[in-house]
Image 1 (cartoon, rainbow, N blue to C red):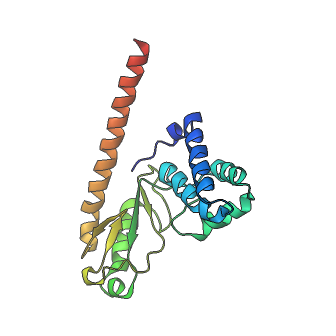
Image 2: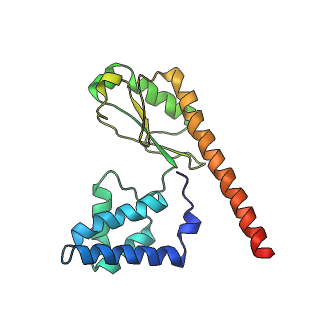
Image 3: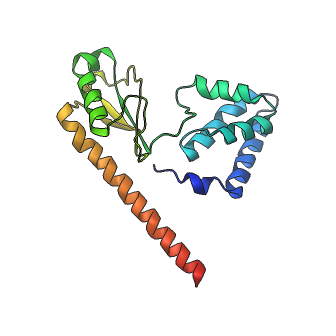
Length: 190
């Protein structure tokens, strides 16, 4: 998913976050830790990462130190404090995948995207995961995942075609957004 970070950073978005925080706080009275995880998911699912201003806002709203929110967000590998691409690419590095060529697949992904593991492409389309121990698909090794999509028995020669599918989807989504923005701008001028 391509994130519209500039659209999310609006007063309406912050009101929605406050409502989410209030719901979680009310559902978990006296248990800030229990409320915090769903709130962080809410932020990450919308921004694609957890920006510093959201950390500060969440900490204030829950009445905990910013360092506590940062600690929780950095402890869990799902959360990211840095912007991620629209798609996260992971290559299983478990034993079955590793012995069947997973490192060559990862190397080809990095070569195709011109990034290292843990980095995001400049166009914000892909983030290559720097760790994927076992993805639980040993019989399909080597396995590559893009978000929740599993690609089995991947060889380095397959990487370009797989990445091209997601690049095309991202371009199409960007084109649709531009068209919608144009229509919206015209309707405001009429």
